[in-house]
Length: 311
Image (tube, rainbow, N blue to C red; front, side, top):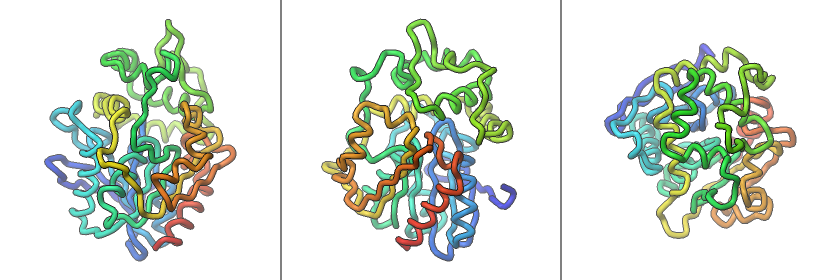
C-alpha cells in the first residue's frame, strides 16, 4: 500500500481526504466506499487500475475516515455527496472520470452520472443497483432488521456505544460478509449477533481491521448512521432519471443484499435496465458483499476490462 499517496482538498468548506495513485494515461477512476469503510476498501483495485494506465482516486466521504465532519451531520443529503464529487473533480482539473461505487457508494456514483453525464465515462457498482425511488423496509422486513434498527434515533448509538470502534467495525464486517440478512431478536441488538470469539472472514486480516478502526475512533459513527441509513428512503429528485453512460453491476451470489425484498427479481428480471439502458450485469458465484476484498483478482479483471472497453 506504500505506493498509494494521500492528499487533502478544500471542497465546499470541508477538508476532504483522498487517496490516489497512477498517471492518468488512459483516464481517471473515482472509487466510492460504503459502510463501515473508508478509501482503504478499494486498495486492491486502485493499484490494479493504476498498473493498467489509469489514475485512481478514492475519497473518504464527508464525515468518514480522515475527511472533516460537516458542522451539522444530520443535515447531510445525497445531493451533498454528489456536489462534493463535482468539487473534487474540479479541484483536480479532471474533466471526465469513471465512477466506481460499492454498498451505499453506488448511490452517489449513479446520481452523479444522472446529474453530470458529461463528466462521466462510465459507472461500475458492486452489490447495489440503481434504484431511483430509494429503499423502504418498514412493512416488508422483520422489526429486528438491521436497517430498521439503525434508523431509530438513538438506538444504534446506544448499541455501538457499548463497544470500542474496532469491535463495532469487526462485528459489522462479520455480519455483512454472511449471506443472511442481519436480523436481531426482540431482546437483542445488532451488535449481539456476533461476539468477540466469532472469527473474521478468511480474507480480512487484523491489519485490515485496524486500518478501518483507527479512523472511526476519530470520526465516530454519528454521520455514518445518518448517511446512509437514515437517508435511504430519499433519493434522486429528477423525474424519470436515466443513467445514459455505460454501466457494469457486479453482484456476489452470496451477498446478503440479494435478500432485500424484491432485490433479486429487480436485477435478474432486467427491471434495473429501465433506468440504466446500457447495463451489463455479472454475478460472482461465491462472492459476498465485500467481493472486491474477498476476490480482488477477479474483481480487478472485471473492472479493468470494463474500463478499457469504454475509454
